Image 1 (cartoon, rainbow, N blue to C red):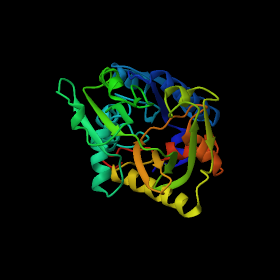
Image 2 (image 1 turned 135 degrees about the vertical axis):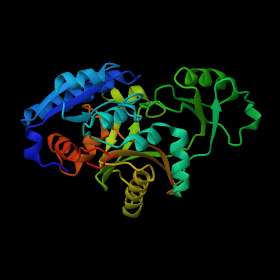
Image 3 (image 1 turned 180 degrees about the vertical axis):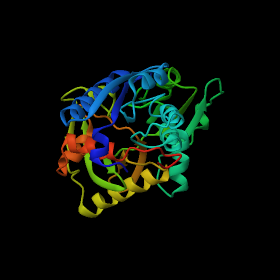
Image 4 (image 1 turned 90 degrees about the horizontal axis):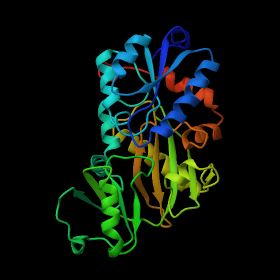
Length: 312
């Protein structure tokens, strides 16, 4: 791990934008990160990620990368692999953990192997014949792409008539999709920094679920920190968050999304290896709730930047 003094003389590239459906969110995250690092005296520059990224990094003389990307080609291990090849230390999880977390199918398998609870699900591939009668869990059913974030392409289906349209919508974003049993539960999200759980926040969306609009429109969701859970259940949620983080081999930081039922079961939804850093983002809000300012949080993340494959 580099010291603050060492980082102050390095050229830091804040990677943002990108090629995914979450580009606009990433632009906001990256701008907030870059502005904060500059205000703290770091030599930071925003790099809009496209297929010419390697040249941009070389031309700008980037020595450290703060990855503020979301979605495909940024959160799925693709950019992390490029940075490893170029020998540029970077923030967040490595290639394998990023790819696992982004692919909901493989992530579920890893969670189950670690003994964690996931909702019953079915994988459907494009072109595959599907008979709804073979689905072994009841409506409502959540239909989602395997590899998108920010609830892009997600539908909650309450009857068989609405299923074809939901499946078609999910297939707009991926060749594999998930049909998942809807769990009636509270939405709890746990922030992980290093190997420690910072805290848990509850999301109460105005919409039916915490969709794209609720995530990025002011006033569309209530955030309650700390999550108003009984103490034992709160600690259980934090513990499960850390277990999920480790199950995928994540490093530096993440946000773990849980569903907590009235019977106190904690279902893992997903692990976000590059949680949002916008004004409405939950990870900075969790950190703020335990006394870590936005600037301090970014500095802690930056200090953890490394090459994960070579370990330097």
